[in-house]
Length: 129
Image 1 (cartoon, rainbow, N blue to C red):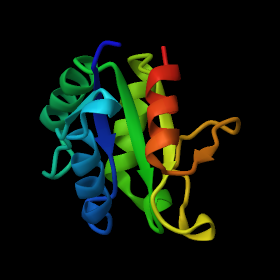
Image 2 (cartoon, rainbow, N blue to C red):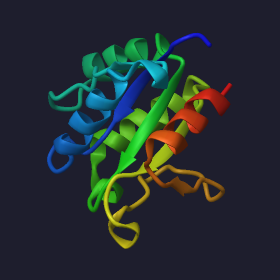
Image 3 (cartoon, rainbow, N blue to C red):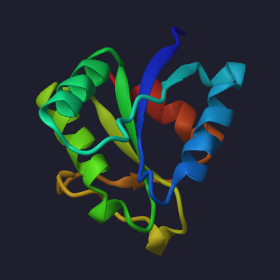
């Protein structure tokens, strides 16, 4: 199986620990993905949106790590909107306890937040086309 290149979208104010967890898992050979940690941490501008669009355009899919404040994280909303506009596949990953993982604004009504285990992550990554 070919390694997939993944863009991780997460709430930089509250969930860097979850991003770090994903980085650690990306280093396991059997998961077959490379993490592109390219979130833009600067104020919203035309340049930052264009930079994000280019970065998201270079990955195979996006993982949105959902935490307690993901529904109000402007950066996650922007990244998801760009992924949707670029027609990039994505999935939502439960970063916190079930009732504490919120969907980002802009997520589709049909989206679901998936549990986060090595097995589910492997299945989600390999199943996204």
